[in-house]
Image 1 (cartoon, rainbow, N blue to C red):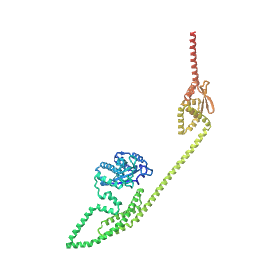
Image 2: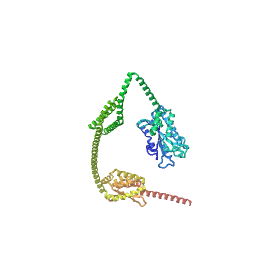
Image 3: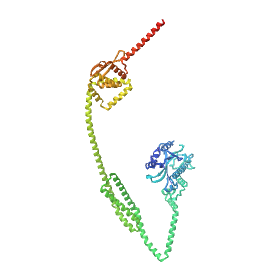
Image 4: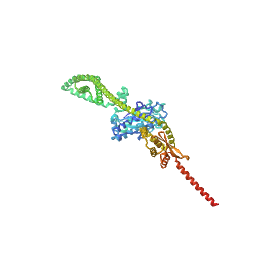
Length: 585
């Protein structure tokens, strides 16, 4: 098990701020599983007790556990546990068993993490504030089981600062008690895993060996190598001794002795030549060949990309690609021949052919890339020209449409001007009536809102003024008939006034001395009339009743009738009182 503690280079941002970026990054595997339809295999975050936790809860909990930390201080650390394929085999036979084993290993690891600080009050994983998630794959769904642990800089009580990156080792002696020995932590984590899973770790796979090979001195590396390969060296030595003894025994036989001497004189020269060739080939020529092959591979990728982008490639490009492909295949073939060669002569011969095959490769690569660039520029120019033509056609169409709209606007402007001239004489009168209607709207909000909404709708729909002009052009044959029709179609004062003005009428009430409406003063094209001059009494009463429903102003005849009824009632009461007085007398 490989253990790594990160403070710098954490994905999603620096650890001196919020852990939200890192937590969001760690969900990339769940996103990839969802895209692949593997919803049932998604793995959430877990708390120290192995219970699932939402990512937002993780971020909120860790970001709040930062008491007494400065702006630039580390707020959290990342602990990564990685398992090899051999180690995973010891963790369980099924996926559920492996995941259960991972939870156990994480708990034991964080126990050791807490103990390694040598801090009173921080003794186990329950004293830490951390969350973790399990990833089953590396990039591209390549198997690679590993765990990401986000652990707070402060303990679970938000009291102690705990830094695994301190260089102080800590311990029971000395002034500074609290510290963190990372070597000891890595070594103990390895032992914890081996003990929990029963994994039989070979010496060359241990932390001490790998760490010494990477950071140790030459003497330390030599000592560990001898220790690890002690058994192997002993076995090789025994085989060499037995082989020498067999050769000594065979040397006593004359024929065998002569054959042995012939081989011992013949083999060293050939072996020397082979060794000399291989030393030169591996130290200089093979890296050069691999570099050429990498350049070929890059050129192939550029070719594939260009072909995907432009669909069709020119014959010249395809011819150069095929030449480079043939050179690449010949290099691989000759390298294989060299690796299988049994003599130095064969190696040198194949090597000469290899050099001859490699020499034209750079020139072919440059030629292929140049052709690709030219093809790309040419295709880009063609696409650009097509786009420009398309844009030009669109602009031409837009210009034509603008011309049509311009003509329509000219016609509409002319029609509007005619309408304006037709109603210019009525402008001042219409303004005064509108002001009067506004006053009426304040007294009748319900009716005015409906009327105003209807007028607004008619204006928005267009042609309202044209309709007014058309109506006015119709000369009424009978003014009384038109006036009666206008009153009949009107529902309120707004619609009544609107209908009157649409037909070029003006109608004002004539009040009786009792305060009621007795008649109407009608104005049509400057001529004044009284409605009573057009209608019989019964029709005039109908108009007065309609006016009352629209405006709320009562007709004079109703007020007179009411007054007369009251007078009759009053006289009747007087007569009753007079009769009663006489009877008493």
